Amino acid sequence: MERVPVLRIGGLLLVSIQVDLQDQTVLALQEDLAERIIATGAHGVIIDITAVDIVDSFIGRMFATIASMSRLMDAETVVVGMRPAVAITLVELGLSLGGVRTALDLEEGMRLLGTAPPGGGSGDGAAAGPAGGS
Amino acid sequence: MTDGSGDVTELLRSWRAPVLERWIELVAAGVRGRMTEPEIRSELTELYGLVEGALGGDRTAAGELRAALAEISRGRARQGFSPAETAIGVFALKQALYEQVRATKDRAAYSTLIDFTAFVDDLGLATFETYASAREQVIADQAEQLLELSTPVVKLWDGILGVPLVGTLDSARTQVVMETLLQTLVDTGSRFAVIDITGVSAVDTEVAQHLLKTVMAARLMGTECVISGVRPQIAQTIVTLGIEFGDIVTKANLADALAYALRHSGIRTVREAGP
Amino acid sequence: MTSPPDQEVPIASGDDVVRVRQLVRAAAAAAGLSLVDQTKIVTAASELARNTHVHGGGGTMRIERAVGERGRAGIRIVFHDDGPGIPDVEQALSEGWSSGTGLGLGLSGARRLSDEFRLASEPGKGTTVAVAKWPR
Image (cartoon, rainbow over all chains, first blue to last red; front, side):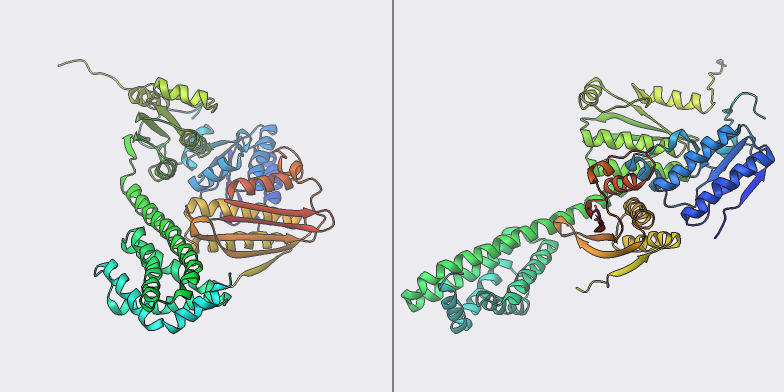
């Protein structure tokens, strides 16, 4: 069974979902993340779903579960790259993802988590971000 | 089927040549050159045979008759014939048969004609329905193409899109515009969209719900929609419809909405002192 | 007009649930559904395939061509299992996000995403659910 790789970028953990998720894979990911957060002391988790074309209730609950679990371990979770068709479907399904934070892309996600993306920010002078960021 | 049906089949069979010819003549006059005689002949000859079969109790023929008529009707609709023209073509078979009965002064045949009339009327009406739905499909396809050409999503600023909606919004159009907006947010990496409804005359439940769903979807994607130009009547409609707009940001006009989006993008605008 | 052969697919493992998504995606695209509608029907199928696998003890899925009102051609996906059946369908359909099993959530979700939803289930007689979607 494929496991989704968890990458570490400084104080963040990055999960980029590239494959069609089987339920087993989802559960394994939740476990792996929990372990890695503890092991690395990460303060943020980014789940990149740019390549994901289907999010059903099970996968939606995974995001919520990961977010709650991470929060218990003092880490914030952001889901990035949700496709419009997926967002529209989730709204139709009535799923709210339990208040998981979301961002358009990896860059935005890192900014939300108070980390400057590698190579600096984009050139539009945007200064949004939590106080005390980099 | 009444007793007369057997007789009708007999009539149609024995008078096939004159009735079919007359039918072709009548239909040809009706299409006014938009179809060739050989085309009409081939079409009606096939139909004639199926009508005979259907009236004779052959269920397969009856099914094929309906299917053939539906196909013809759809084809006519696509070619731009009016629905009456298609139905009249079917009704012309009745006329052809009447004329034949009158010409031969066959009294007994008159009573069987009544059942036949009901049968043909039924077929004619069926063509109307097929026609109508085929025509609707053509219109729907054209409307969709028009929509794609005219979907208005503009860039107001780096990272801020604008969607000025004008006129009467219908459900289908609103859906297409909203889907395009969400995709454009991703394509341009924009975090904000201002949906301006100043020019919208009325908002019904479906449209309001589409707007709502779009805002919610945008939020799920990590972007935000601000709705501007909410006039008092529209505000009232939304409240009356009982739709919860919750914490969706709404502004009275596009300028305010833009200011809001700029502020939340961390952009400050400064007026320079004069020369 | 020939229709493509109905494909019947077994659902016996997590891999099969993934395969169902891929097959339905292909069929929906071939039927000319828009990207959003494809996503909706595939998501509905995913919910139902999971129910079949997890609650029905495994079963089958079949994709059919379906003609809706106004004669538009779309697709219908039928799931069947010989599992325990659903004792109280109404109650299952009103289950919310937080209640455990996900069976009802999957059913009500699939219903919201489809143009047509049919369910037949009796304890001891298994469950059959069919969802359909047509081009707009």
